[in-house]
Image (tube, rainbow, N blue to C red; front, side, top):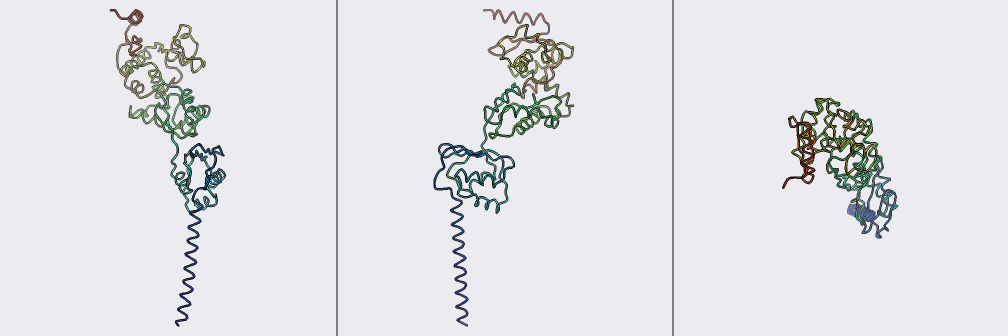
Amino acid sequence: MSRIIRTVVRILCVFWGMTLLCALLGLGAVIYFNSPPSFQPPNGSYEALTIEPEGKVILEVHSGESATSVGRRLMEAGIIRSHYFWDFLSYINKSYIKTGTYQLTLPVSQLEIRAVLVAGRQILRRITIPEGVTLKKTARILSDGGICDEEGFLAAAADREILNNYRIPGDTMEGYLYPDTYLFSPGYPPELVVKSMADTFFKRLVEIQNDALDLSPVELHKRVILASIVEREYRLDEEAPIMAGVFYNRLNIGMALQSCATVEYVITEIQGKPHPEVLYTRDTEIRDPYNTYIRPGLPPGPISAPGAVALNAVFHPLSSDYLYFRLIDPAEGRHYFSKTLDDHIKAGTLYVKGPSA
């Protein structure tokens, strides 16, 4: 009996010894393959992957790209030891890696890389879109910031499916992309940039006027058009509601809006010319539907991205008898509002002569 017991004990010792040895070998393999290579790969660009000075790595994960593809790219760049271990990690952890642009710092383990990609901790760039800019200027800002290319953004902003989703009757998203500061990752899909800015617009719009979305798309479009004009005209916040009231008064009596901002839009956005320092009579006589000097009523579409002040002014205009306004203090941005053309002309004379001593 004792011999049998000794035999069993011996077998168990061998078994547990082999098990422990296999466990230690497995742990060693995991530690080895998980750890980064002993050498640091040289700076340079690989497929959707750039190694910058001081070991900074910019990695792009494409939409629909598999974890296996990412692992092979990481190994080819010399960032990980083996893509087989990467595939093993993907097999035991079914969490998906997320599309985006990421920054890593070498040396970095496979587990650390995977944690970043699964969590989606992307590089984000701060991009500010000012009030009053047009789609073309917005596209340029985004392109200069490395977010998306101009052509792709403008195409997305004119995509009929996106326009229909937001019930926009115009041909583009002009006026419906809210001017604000955004955080986007480099190479962000332009259609998602457009949707993000549009979502912000409608969120802010409801904050300004809680029943704004109850308006028909055509009626809301008219408000946005007028807000885009007010945005380009006002200089002082407190004057915006007065200007909106003036424009409503003109619309109500069939008078031309005579907005210099619409003429500037024709010159810069439609004709593609530099922004004029001064508008001349020949400018106000340009034959174009957006020229509100020669065409009564609203222009066909918005001329800029209105911010909160302009939108609030259009939804809450200040009632008055004013039909005219004129800039009298360029430094302060103050306007003179008047009821008659004579007063309007006198205000211009007063400005030219300057204040009396």
